[in-house]
View (tube, rainbow, N blue to C red):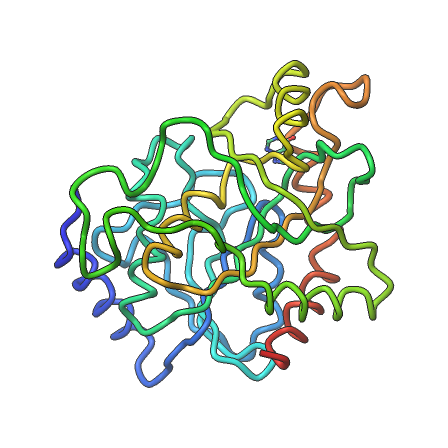
Length: 273
Ligand code: HPA
């Protein structure tokens, strides 16, 4: 298991790479959304492989590097590619960068993902503000000895997603004519897509979208007291809703198609928080 000192070592290593630059927001980019980095002014790129104790991204559409730079007037640390548990990483490895960011003084997280729409009122290409999550399976990044420096043994999850951030982001999206939803994200480890029966069950449980990321990161981020904005891009309707199989390519394409819009909103969001 990772020790507190491992996180400290990695935070120091990343700080050294960034020199004078001090980020205040961490942004995690989901499948196909990596283009958001293109809007940063003169970013500093740091591959995950250069950070001690950190694993690397193997998922398609995930570059596996940090970009640090200014976006919308805020100093940002961006993850172009995340670490998923389905890649074989332990849950604590998947959330490692969150805790490293916290030690660097970052207390705001914008987390994005691609997901399947469970709510039949949703359409591919639409955005959903995550207002809560469901994670019924056992995997949890906080299992193991609690690291008190980050947070308590039994952290509260009543308000995972920041209400004020949601309102600010919603206003921006609506001002651009976006039909933005607000709903519950159901976490599955993947890597297989869900069965139609699972999707029906998730709908009964109150889920609006389903994906293979985000929740471990949000648990770790709330544990250490970060404010979170969670953004889902509906890249496809979930299994069984339409009479066609799901594909990873479709997810990446939908992500690429939406990334310009999302970049605009996130950039404006920075100017409003
Ligand atoms: N299920 C799980 N993860 C996903 C999906 C989906 O339908 N689409 C994009 N990521």
